[in-house]
Length: 374
Image (cartoon, rainbow, N blue to C red; front, side, top):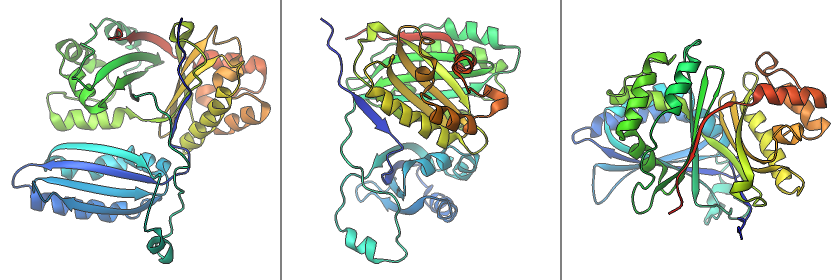
């Protein structure tokens, strides 16, 4: 008998304050250069909407290890900033100083000593505390997206579908669980699921000869040039390609063998990407409470005005197109219409239009590989 999982819900849209922790290991002799770069960055970050405060700390045990913590009103403004071209340019001076970095993001669940914060007229924090601990499933979800030169789509799809899967086990605590790769026109989206440390898993994958061969093979077809042998070029490319998860919802009603994975592409109007992702997240929360919904789970990825929704659906995805799209009901369909770039997606206004919009939005599956259960 197949045991179904519990409901899982993770979201950047719960309105809670965000604490970001950045761990850095500096090169020897780079301390003064790092401090100058940090001061410049700190002044710029202070003017970013949603930023509350930051602290710079140095290890008392190892002076080459540093810690930057920052607090944000909520997660969306931080994600918008950290994925912006402004941020890519801002952190460039840090690259030559730093041997290794790791970024961690946390919603604030409990807090003590808050009276000092509230008594200061300059310390207005609009975010709330996270209402309750979330139930996770031990899986970290992340995606990358990039575009290839028009006309090269078939060649790229063939290259990307033909690679040998790397070893799933990274170390005793980390394991690759699933890799799903889709295309929509000349846009590629690669979504990964990892048990354990995402950064360790991504590094493990990038070092595998079969993966390196595939990456080198698609290099001539990329719209954005990159040189993976150059650390700074590779770092910049993958920073720009990052497509963060902003919401995940799993109802726990269906066994994995009963569902099929799909990806839907939504191009928002300029400046409307976050609002669009939030709308879809709201629908997916409602769908998780609906026992008739064919959507078993949904993961929303968003960067700027690109939104990708990975959905596991029981049965045919076009059986209930509104539910599959995340726009059940005329009000949500109308809201989606206002947020979409109608030149890129078209605008669904009726059931028939929804079916057509679903067909236009569905991405082409290139490969979907699950690691064997250990």
